[in-house]
Amino acid sequence: MDSHLITGNRRSLAGFAPTHFSWRQEGAVGVVTLNRPERKNPLTFESYAELRDLFRTLSQVDEVGAIVVQGAGGNFCSGGDVHEIIGPLTRMPMPDLLAFTRMTGDLVKAMRACPQPVVAAIDGVCAGAGAIMAMASDLRVGTARSKTAFLFSRVGLAGCDMGACALLPRIVGQGRASDLLYTGRSLGGEEALQWGFLNRLAEPDALSDQAVAWAAEIAAGPNFAHAMTKRMLHQEWAMGVDEAIEAEAQAQAICMMTQDFHRAYHAFVAKQRPEFKGD
Image (cartoon, rainbow, N blue to C red; front, side, top):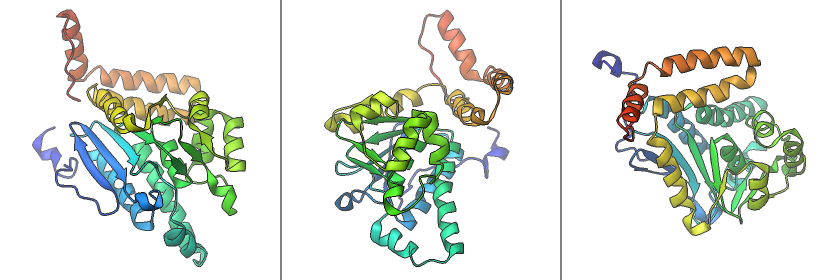
């Protein structure tokens, strides 16, 4: 990118040190770890906002090609903290409640809008807003002992939280999504794999390493093209087939202008493996 376009359009996460979760970079992979293991990694008002802001920032970050989201201590995320979120919500007036639910939805919007594919590494408890974060990720690798539950009906709330009624049926189908959202029951790892909620299963001790390795494999690919694929997967939900075909024609023509496309061609001719650089 020309130097005069960099200001305001590109950012670096060098030195990034969040307050409410852990962050590290392994090569081109950014790893988010929800890190309150003594409470099964619940979310707070502050962690929602900080996660939202990170995923928004990632749209301006070139050095990260894929993201892993995981939890510490053998669990993914138990949802909103009962004492720090649920209790205060029962005392809030409607305008404050709407501000909160919009903020939580903004986290999902940010995860879907960031150009990097997001891999969720799911072990143990994955409930409520934790299940939503897993759902909002692009890919999911879990363990047989993982238990994913959209618990909203268990606390007197609708299953339509943070986009669940739009996203979950597209992953597992309308009937299965209805089952999970009406009952709030737990979806075990084996069943989640059969249903297509999980893409892969791993042993608990290998989960994080396998998720990072998968993300690294993706990040080593053509990141500009991956970002286009993610955008099209999201946008085409609201398109008819003809509109989707035209949108993909335009998107693919743009990708054909990239240096990654040209590198891949020349590497193929030379019988070499292409080195993608995301430009």
